[in-house]
Length: 602
Ligand code: GTP
Ligand code: MG
Image (cartoon, rainbow, N blue to C red; front, side, top):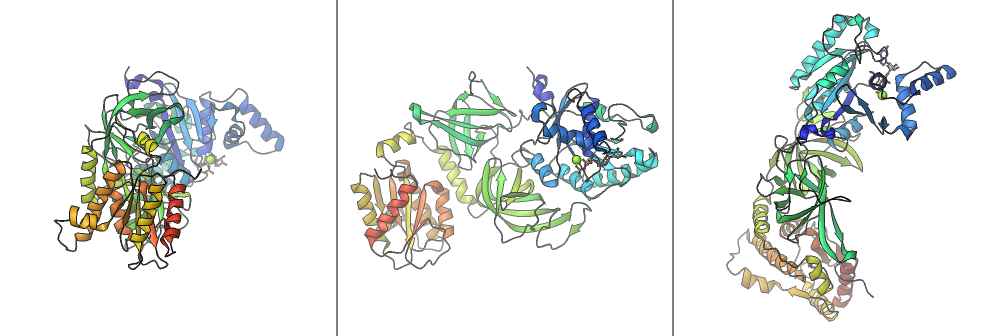
């Protein structure tokens, strides 16, 4: 079966945009009525209600009435409207505001194949006509028809239509968007929606429905490299089942049993054992546009937010810095010095604005020089810095894994697309760790079995603090306590590293970095063996911790600051002020318990 033959591939996903009141809802109502997609008697019922209440009929009321009764969920659900043209079924997304529009275009309802942009013939091109056009171009929607609406208000005048074609055509041209066409319509009177209107005899192009049939549903990108952002990892421990199912939506390419997959940013590698499906036979493959779940031959540890790829195909980018084009919709401007949340694929990561290269007014396309922040409704080219590295692609490689949204205070306030991956301070080191993970010999013993045997999950406990705090006393006391309680625990003294693993190191400026790297690699080995490892170091900084976090899974690290005075910028998990090692070790033990590294007290 070819991809084109399946019914879902034939369905056209549409978005509709335009300035407030230019007639989006009216046109949607018309499309539903003229394609026979309305429930029996619905139109008459709404008309009758209007007559009874003495209100003039509005097509938008029809949509409201449909939204009110979810019973006809096939015509409308949330903001999505379903109808059929001569050749295919369509889903049309009406976004009442910018935020919804942007969110729909970037996430979920997302992958719009084509867009309709509505412009009021009398009012002409307005700000939002341009902004929506800009968003469409930025997010890569290639098929666009411009509907010049309310032609009845300008007496179906050709010159009025041509003026808008000229003005808006010029705007789109600057965005390098080539519209499929401009169509003179009247939503209210039904002109050129399904049938032609003789009053626009001068217009030779298609009606709206004909234009929709001319658009091509974009086939899911099965021929691109395999990309699946990991949505969830399911386990079934209650059935004594050690399988983990890695689940997500396939954004590009195809995956089959036997394929070698690599997860990024971790670089962990494994082989697909089987594809799994809920309540149906195991599929032979999963392809772009489908949800997938698979098990692995090796027991590698992956989690939500990673990007699954194939070893035989081009790798994604992995870094914590990139250049992006973005659209800002927040009431509060986007500015440096503030922390935001960035969502890309299934990854969620803290971000801040490192630099603004240029800001453009999306309506006028005028650039503003030297802008220090990005105001609401502006578009900007920026450098974004993330709290940790994530995996993504460039739009020329895979659009779905290059789009992101920005959350400020729990609300989506902007979105955009990655333009260029930039290196960060850890890039060189990360390359080495990617290679190390790629070459890693995974044990046949699953992490869970090792954990069950030892009655603990492996952890790296970093004990840092003021220079004169007695970290070693705390570490020794903690080691004894945990050991007596039956844990597999080891205190790695600094001397054990300095004169052994570090023996060849010269005490230069780069020395500390390399020392930490080696210590972290040793820790990584011991954690893989299932041990709880205690390490002490004076005055660790956040940068030190970030560095260690490249070698050791940050989820397995707990940091303890010893002493009443905090002298570095490190974000620790626990502060121990008590000088008494016994009291301190009780505190750390409690932390390990709450974090689930050691069992709760019986
Ligand atoms: P928002 O959702 O609020 O952004 O508006 P909208 O774009 O959905 O516009 P809507 O369809 O609600 O129409 C706004 C007003 O324009 C309504 O009063 C419609 O009756 C009127 N209108 C829409 N299309 C036409 C048309 O073709 N001719 C005339 N004369 N009025 C129209
Ligand atoms: Mg509306």
